[in-house]
Amino acid sequence: MDAFNRGLIVLLAAIWVILMAVVILVTWSADAETIDRLGDLVRYLDEHTDTPSKLILTLGAAALIVLCLIVIIAELAPTAPSDDIRLEGVTGATTILSADAISQRIEQEVTAGSDSPPAGQGVQGLGDRPR
Image (tube, rainbow, N blue to C red; front, side, top):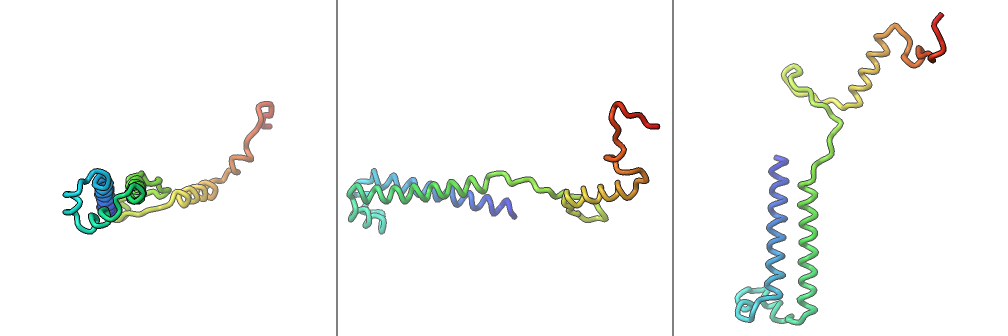
């Protein structure tokens, strides 16, 4: 389901980018006959055919395009790897353990099950010999 949602968001953002590109193209290249057929956007463009109005519309559409591209990049970027380890087949179920929990358990088992002192205390230099 997560992949479906991500795909849907990317698809909608891509459609929005294309729509904004069409709006920019129509703003700068449409002739009077085409503008008469486009409805509400046409009325706005017909009343505001000067360069500052076209520039404002272009900058607004460009900002929306950048926003949609950021959404697409964020959705398609790989996620950070988790520190969880998945154990499958444990009594017929899937168990998820964190790496910290596993390392703590290993450390406990190594120190509790050993009759010898911890490794740091038994290290000797090259010149020292056991007596």
